[in-house]
Image (cartoon, rainbow over all chains, first blue to last red; front, side):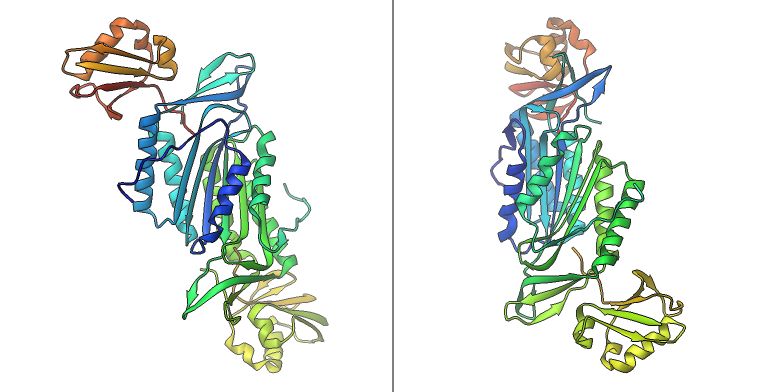
Length: 147
Length: 147
Length: 77
Length: 77
């Protein structure tokens, strides 16, 4: 899997449910797959000091982020017997209730997808330089920090 | 969550990617959710003694199966801080490459969905009386057994 | 006692039916099973669990239910 | 050496710019950081990591790269 071209993981705006459905449909020709596992990150309307988050505005150090996503992908394929793996992350404004992260892994066997998906999502949260500005309904903001 | 009416988890035939996409879309009004995790079981075209599985024909002891799905649901809501949970399983013929199991959990936080989804999928495989007849391309068959 | 017995999957292939009702006067699940074996000898080669009124039971369980099911290995998902 | 410095998120809010280039002759990342602090004193209150040519580095790392980035806490996903 090495020497593969670095892909652009970023999508402008929210990731739609149609996009996710289409992505699932594309795997129906891959009949060695027995298990898919999908993680979706959705923007929460958190209430902080009586103000409600209405959206997150994502920015990234894009070149470094795509290189990190690539590293995570390579590591996941080395560690786990995966048939397919896809990651998409939003840039720009994603409203509360909309999806900002889509990670999709597939394998012949289910045990593998559970381990692989959690590994990938934790790595994305920890290692990828993406920044999130939580916009409140009154247009004030604060900066999101992953825990 | 107890005393809830037992739902019918079964769908006739394969579970379509559109159905899954729609199900995701319906959660965009639930803005306390931060993480979704979805498991999809897909019928594999396994090759056994030079014959390829072309479909699985699912039957179930439906009343007991729906009661077991209900128990699994109740237990999952007790054990994990879930906002939503959905399970769908196919009955009848599902071709290789098509989806026969759809488990969908949502929570404010990601750690919860990983644990909950694996718990539910393992319980479905172990405890629910569903039977699968693997149909080969030459129309012979064998009975599937979960590992 | 009138008991309905349900057969599934490869079990139903052996019995050639999915369901039957019979009058039975035994006390334990094991006694009913002996009776079923007497009708379908080939079932002795099959692995299955037994449910009484939709709950799994052992051979030593008392027969109390109207609905007994012979369940081959599960294959959901 | 001509160095491009990139600022992101709350760091860019402090510097009021996302990128700048400057000539710098120091040896270590820490020296460059002191220089940046001299321009943007308020950055001392911010938490961030430093990347050199897209890899995270420590203050003791030798300055070798053309592209330095100040990265506030990650918030992906």
